[in-house]
Image: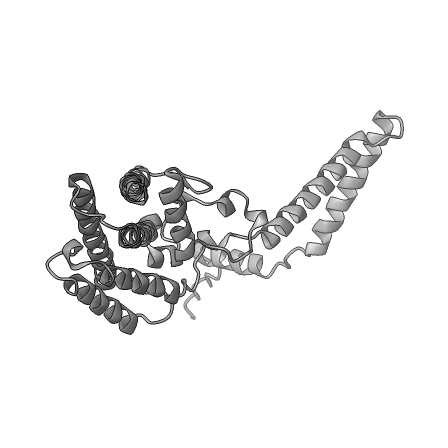
Length: 305
C-alpha cells in the first residue's frame, strides 16, 4: 500500500510577495509629461472661465498677472542691457600700467638742476647725491623698463629711496639758501640768486610730485592692479567720468601738475586731497615753496633797487 504523498506547499512567502509587488510596480508605465501639461492648461482654462462668470466677462486678475510678468521681463532685459554696456573707469580696474618715461625724464631734470647748484648749497659734495640718484634711476630702468605694473618690494624700496634722496638734497639746499639770505651772506647779484632759487623751486615741485605719485592708492603698480578703490587725491575726471576718455587714469604728469599748482597757488586747485597724509604733504610743500619764493624774490628786489 503506497504511502501518502505530502501536500505540495507552493504558497509564496511574504518576502517573495513583496519583491513581486516591487517588480510589478516598477513595470508600471510612468505618466506622460504631456498629460500634466494638458491638465494644467485645462485648470487654467477653468479658472479663466470662473473669472469671467464672477467678473462679468472681465479678466482683472489674469490681465494684471500678465502685465506684471511683462514688466518684470522688460525690467530684467533693461538690467542686463545696462550691465552689458556699463563701463568701469580705468582708474578702478586693472590696466597695463603707465609708461615709465615721463617720470624718468622728470627725475633726470631734477638731477641736472641739483648739479647746477653752487657747491656751497650742496650736501657734502655736488656729485655725491646726484650720482646715487642716477645709479638708482638706471637700476630701476634696467629692472622695469617699460610699464610700471610690476609689484616688487625691492623695486618699490628703490623707488622710494630715490625720491627720498631727491627731497633730502633739495631740502638741504633750500635751508642753506634761506639761512644765507636771512643772514645777508648771499645774493650779491640778482641773476645768480634768481637762477639758484628757480632751480631749488623746480626741484621741489618734481620731488613732491613724486611723493604724490608714489603714495596715492599705494603707488603706480598697485594702481595698475586696482588694489585700492578709495583714492587719496580726487581728480576732476573721477568726479565727471563722462567728460574724460574711457581709458583715463592718473599718471605722473597729473601728479606733477598737482605739485606745480600747489607750489604756485599754495592751496588745492582742481585736485582735492582726501586722506590726511595727502593734506599734510601738500601743506609742507606750500610752506617750503612760500618761504623759498618770498626770500628769493625779496632779496632780488632789494638788489635791483
